[in-house]
Image (cartoon, rainbow, N blue to C red; front, side, top):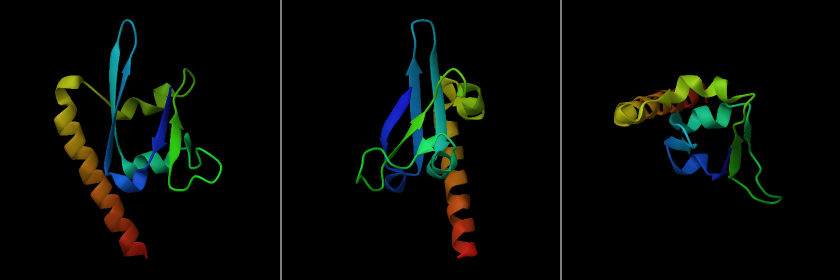
Length: 96
C-alpha cells in the first residue's frame, strides 16, 4: 500500500484503513510518527513541497503493528496519538 499526498503539517493524527478480502486493519499514527518513519518519503513529485508518501508492504507491515488498533478502539487511539503529537511538538519547541 502507498498512502500518498500526506501533508504532515496539515493535521495532527492520521487514521489509515486497509481493506482486504478477508480482513480490515486500522492504523493510527501521529503526524510526527509518520514523518519520522523510515518508510516515509518526503517528496512525492518533483518540485512538490510539504507532501510525501508512506509505503507499507509485506516486508515492513509488521513494523506498524504498534499503531494498529481494533475498529472499536479508534476514538481512544486517536486521542492517544493526538497526545503523542502534542508531546512531540512541545519537546521540539523546548529543543529550539
